[in-house]
Amino acid sequence: MKFRVIFDFFLLLGSIHGFLFVIGTFLLRRKVELQVIFLNLFVLFLSLNNFQTWLIQKRLVYQDFLGGYFIFPWYLLIVPSFYAFLVYYLQIERERWPFVRISLALFAVAILTRLLAIYLVKIKSFPESLIRNYDLFEDIVALIYSIFLYVKSIKLVFRYQSLYPEILKMDNLNWIKWFLKLGGAVFLFWVFAVIVNTLAVEQNPFYSYYPLRFFSSVLIYWVGYQGFFQYVVLKDRIGLRAHLAKNTIINRRLGDIDLEKRYKGDFESIAQYIRDNERYLDPMLSLNGLADELHMGTSKLSKIINDHAGDNFSDYVNKMRVDVAKKILRNPEYNYYTIVSIGLECGFNSKSAFYASFKKITGMSPLGFRKGKL
Image 1: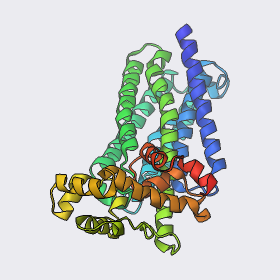
Image 2: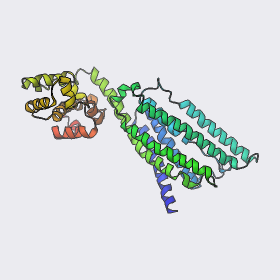
Image 3: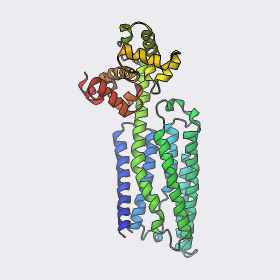
Image 4: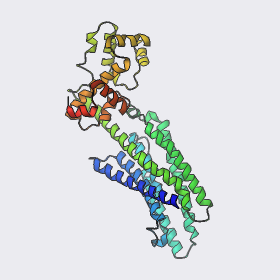
């Protein structure tokens, strides 16, 4: 009994957290894009499903409504919402159908069918076991449809990357890959619940959905924040890249960084190559890779940079990236872009790497630099 109380509390807390996330997201965005809408719908339907379960466990609703059997099949819309978010996030809606209309049609049919079943039981045309049989049937249909979209999501992320090369330049999709891996556990718990409900004597025993509800509550916390944060960064990077390309005042090249002019010999041509080709903006740039591009040995390239720049390869390239970031952070035209998106667009591969390098080189954080406009 104590475990059940703790579980119910966690279920309620996760649902409330999901509702607050959805409300907060809409309040924070001046313009609500389709990606944000479907991400919020995913969190909302997951929260509604768990909240409905909590209400039923506490017997707070549905007791006298149409015989007490009616529930909303929110679980029919959870995975479809995520799949639609994924399609629009990757900007491939022209190549892949998001299944929004089919999902809404299934939801409407499920509600009408349940109402019909309840009506038939209420007028004594069918036994009450009809409701349980329908519950199992609806659960199985929802499970099959959700697995179908889950498999399609896996294919989009792992097999069809050629459909969205521009997105991959800005997001490696690791957070989505992790979500899909966690999603596999959710489906295992769902299959477990269906098997238990099929074999159980009582209708939908409360323990059958414990693992599924618990894990889905955890996902509300994780995917909501991850998805929204990643989308905001991606959107900022797209806008920032377009703005930088058009802006004549803030040039993405170093311009006034003339390190190569202070040195002679091989270093001059190396620095010129890095600058003219903006190789420092490539987060995957490595000493070995640059040496291959310049057709020279790795140790020779490393020694030239160390001797002339006074830094190792990583610090030398990071100084170039930080100088570009400082230009952008100084300019009020870019105040609406997140600091993380600026760091990623300047060639750093993570928020932590950007903050650490910026602090090491300038002695202050990017946020402190932006506020000080030094």
